[in-house]
Amino acid sequence: MSNIQTKTDVILIGAGIMSATLGSMLKELVPDWKITVFEKLASAGEESSNEWNNAGTGHAALCELNYTSEKSDGSIDISKAIKVNEQFQVSMQLWSYLVNSNLIRNPQDFIMPLPHMSLVQGEDDVTFLKKRFEALSNNPLFQGMEFSDDPNKLMEWIPLIMKDRTSNEPIAATKIDSGTDVNFGALTRMLFDHLKNQNVDIHYNHSVDDIKRTGDDLWELKVRNDSGKIERHTAKFVFIGGGGGSLPLLQKCGISEGKHIGGFPISGLFMVCKNPEVVAQHHAKVYGKAKVGAPPMSVPHLDTRFIDNKKSLLFGPFAGFSPKFLKTGSMFDLIGSVKPNNITTMLAAGAKNLSLTKYLIQQVMLSKEKRMEELREFIPNAKSEDWGLVVAGQRVQVIKDTTTGGKGTLQFGTEVVSSADGSIAALLGASPGASTAVSVMLEVIEKCFPQHIKAWEPKLKEMIPSYGVSLLSNPALIEEIHTSTVRTLGLRRELQPV
Image 1: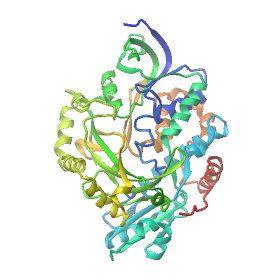
Image 2: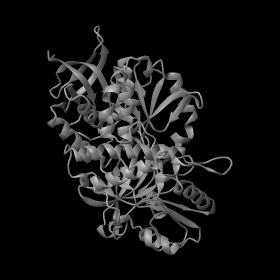
Image 3: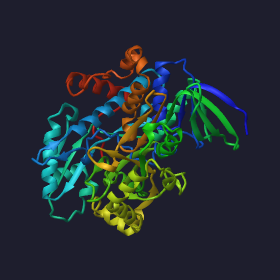
Image 4: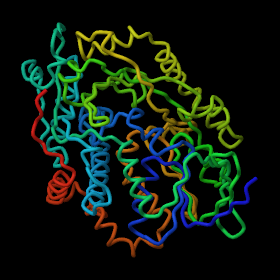
């Protein structure tokens, strides 16, 4: 056993986009705080933040149909779409601040302009999409959205999807050119390079085995280093940002807020196009509607991506089930997360989600040809030999007891769990995750450091000009922020030829 013992102000567990964002914000707010990071893998951004493990959609609710629901009276509820859009605007503001301050450079290495589209077929869905378009296009956050059910116009927008399409079913799409593709892996690595330059101690190949409270109100972490030796590290504040690995660590710290919470792991696969000629024919993120019984993160989409400065084309995700909480996790993660305080919650969730479990298992069993059939709903003439499979990241959805859903309700989204005294916080959940990282980390800062917020407010407003203001109620600010972030991040909006 090593006798290494260190004391620090802040410990961040996990070197993903969440810790990268929180670390970068805290370094601006209080430069003299000592921050230490522990990551069990060999480098930053290797799990859920990695560019091959998430969809890379700058989630701004421009194309994701599951953020707009139809109410019983037939009207469209756009409240969630507004919230998600505002959260993404907050992320863009912080990234712009970091670029303008020369803390990160070359934004084109992590964000590119790309049209976002929604595509539906069938009379009912075309009617829904038109109503959704009318509700959103009247809103200043969604200016510039277009709708068309004209096959000739759609052929202009999405030639690869429309070519050789023989169905006579009605088809329609919306398009907005202010969408983005975000390489969260590249951004995460950039932010950790920046943190390293700010004298943040970053330890890779270090696994956190245990977390416990000390007598003097600090948190002590038992950390296993790359040679297998145990180190002890204490901090006043701990953030658990380990993706799917956050729940087991939250359970170990023993705070009451972490009890009665479970996790449901969902894995995913993407098909990736290996034919550059096909890749060149598509330039958009096109989202369809999820099949009945499918989880929200299984909405099918045909995505242009920019990875390693190269244009790629992905289709998916095909959901799957694995008991692992991380791609690099253990087959015993799920069973190990069942504790006396959450067993009834977990059992209730199991009973409620039998159809989801069945759906996930069916997805795992799909043959390559069955996956090609789903792809051909988007690209009618897709050839099997042009497409391969890539395993995407593991997502762990939160299971908790809620007043509306009752015992064992599966939550889709992200959730901050923090202790009453604000000394420890964990981020659980998944999509739209990375896109909302800045808003979520603002929530962590406000929950855990309320005594500092007044003093930090000027700096927070410098980093995020809309801090404390509703964008929706301030259209002039929307325009001002949009103009400056587009300029700073190099998001010119002219259409690129397909």
